[in-house]
Length: 138
Image (cartoon, rainbow, N blue to C red; front, side, top):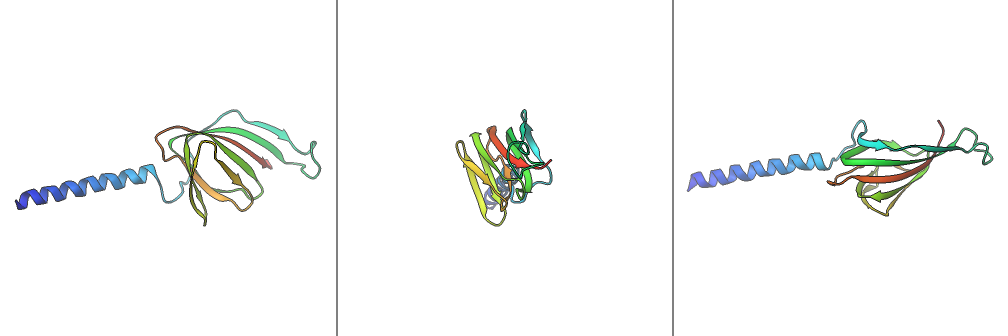
């Protein structure tokens, strides 16, 4: 009887270890150091200087960003680079520095102003796609 209990305890510990390990792969608690599992489709830009006063050197950029399962974008700031990201497909997890974590699903938007510092990951098993726009200075 004692052997059965020890075997059962060993099995529980082994399964728990696998679950915890899978949790690290599926969802991280700290941002990655470099992007992984993302691809950026064709980029379209417009030079805003000739279009609007006081925007010399700034461009409007539009991109489709694909996040494979397990993909992540490191912590970054939008100070000086405001944008809006619209989730076209899938679910992404947005980690807002000092503000918590939000699950973003198809149809949701991430509003990225000068106060936004975040990192994003795809914890799901499905590909996610984002239509991302921003104003930046090359």
